Amino acid sequence: MTAPSHAGRYRIEQLIGVGGFASVYLARDEELHSWVAVKILADNWSRQADVRERFLQEARLLRRADSHLLVQVFDLGELDDGRPYFVMTYADRGTLLDRLRGTPMSVAEALGLVGEICQGVAVLHSIGVVHRDLKPSNVLFCSRPEGGERVMVADLGIARFTDHLSGMTLPAGSPGYQAPEQLYFDGAPDARADVHGLGALTYHLLTGEVPGKPEQRVPPSALRGGVPEAVDVAVMRALDPDRERRWEDAAAYAAALTSPTPAPPPPAPDAPPLPAGDDPAEPGGRAVRNKRRAVLAGGAAVTVAVVATAAVTLIRPSDGTPAPTTTLKPPQTTTARWLREDSDIPDQYRPLIVQAGTYCEEPGLSPALIAAMLKAESGYDPLLSDSVRNEYGIARWTPEVLWHWQPGGLQSPKPAPPFDAELSIVSMGRFLCGLGPQIERLPGDPALKLAALYRSGVEPLKRANGIPAKWRGYTDQVSRYLRDYRPA
Image (cartoon, rainbow, N blue to C red; front, side):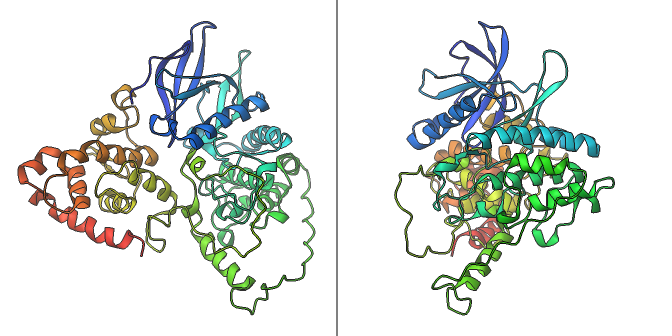
């Protein structure tokens, strides 16, 4: 779908962001003579009522908060083709992710920035909303008319009202920042999940690293000199795997960061009597379930919803139905249906792989095929750079070919390496769905024909009446990985 020339009275100028479900464009308000950002739901999702409603709910939440500490929504509407859009603040100074790629901030600068982010999240908490996806790309910067800039928290695509949370809330979030309870079906996240996200952002800003697994984590001061002890204590408490031991909300965490002395540790929660069936010695009791959780936590990102707003297809609105009283089955990951869990597919790419592998119903296309191709192409190296072949990124795209198959196609700016992993992987699905029908009648395994198509294009397959000899070594490699990645 090409970019529209207008969204209502807003003249579309260029693409500035692509997510799994929507694209964001820079636009000009021709009546008020100002720049705005317009977020437009993708055509293939606009016909799905639940996704469409979730998209509009993001606009309503931002409008309800109506704070300069958050991206503000000014208008919404519908394109002629039926796609909904909403108009919001244009972040002309980029994202926190952009800045993390530059010169490290001083400790004082990092803590000052975290304080402003906390204020924005506190606004959400004050109206009973949990963001659930705090990460550097969702923190934006905007110029102030009087000079300087303001910080804005963005992207409420998977946010939830706390009074709508239930034990059936499904996994969501982003690797490295999501709280452990966001990985499971049986632990509806509250404001303390956002506290974990804020702690992870603080840790990243101070140390240049995303927090590792709890058992491998060290205080920020161990990686960066000049971090006060009180900040160490506040951050590590925010990152505690046990949400009962974290700060209760963003405001409490912000206060702890600015405290001159370390805050005392929270009181140990009273140990309630074990319910029937929770005897650690019993089969299926707490000891067994905790072991299962520990195993899943080691692969945290497996359960992450697709970057940006991919979780919208998974979240069910609360209908007031009482929670079931029977014991739930062990948590299943959001990608386990398509990808083998004990394989070497990196956790952070699994949701994107599923998205690309289910982009259409082309014969042979599957998430396992996308994963196998990525393994063969780059070994999952997002920084791959082969200047001799002019191929870059996790999917080995050339800039010219990626320009055609990226969301928005040639209407979007020509991409320049390094290529973002999300853009690279999603565009693979678009390529295979776009050209796959042209080789369906050729003999050979449908999946391996698609793999060869990705390497050679349509005409070489037609001339060879199947997979060209040149690419059989490559497709044999893909075939081996494909067997490893398909669910048992």
